[in-house]
Length: 340
Ligand code: CP
Image (cartoon, rainbow, N blue to C red; front, side):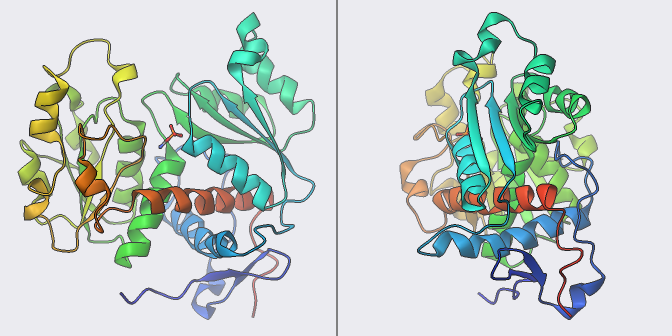
């Protein structure tokens, strides 16, 4: 596939250079000190993050994965919920950019003694940190923290609300594989109701000009979801018909307080993505999944291991996207470094 050349690249010090004359008029800064969600950022900001991630990805394939870009900056990962991908990729992204990184495990911190999020935030800010990456079970927790502290805050998932960096890495993967996002038909399948990944994907993909269809058990489809400009389909086959991309969601069993479908076996039969259900999609359909995967429930091993799936590449791209965000928030972009 013919991919567009990158708009941005890194100089020897790990700072971004504009390498396309067309992009000289582009802003190289984000409008906020924080990244809290995709609902409130512009298409141009999403494009800037994706272009910067493209430049950052090159670092991941070097023998020595280290640039001095964020030397002297420090970040804390503050996760009130479990995570493998998001927390590890933020930590590695910080290390690859030479930031000092610290993980706080809430189960071994003063949170278990009853310390509030506000006080925990102020305490770590008093130690001089520049960035807090937070995951919390309550929607809006990152927004509250961002108002309390002057350090930057990145939302790594807040309840059922948003998971913006997941959606950004999903869009990065789509753009990398398809060469564009605008005009693509994207099917999002599964537990939409509890999915912060679905919400951030819908905000982001709509801004980038994709058309979105969704499908899942009716109790897991939020009322009024079509107000967001998505088409609700009554079967997986209808949702997948002619799709360029199928984004399969994890069943969020930890957020389901009642039975939303009779059994996992029945869910797998009706909504699980297998080779048969993908037959109506475009021949070169791309299948993505945020992980962790419930193999054999929402997606079969055969699809996961097939060439149409990019689930491991999503993980790699997650590091590049998070490096880009940290760079843009902490270094302020390349406003003064754009090449002639
Ligand atoms: N996709 C995602 O957020 O995975 P983790 O829960 O492992 O971070």
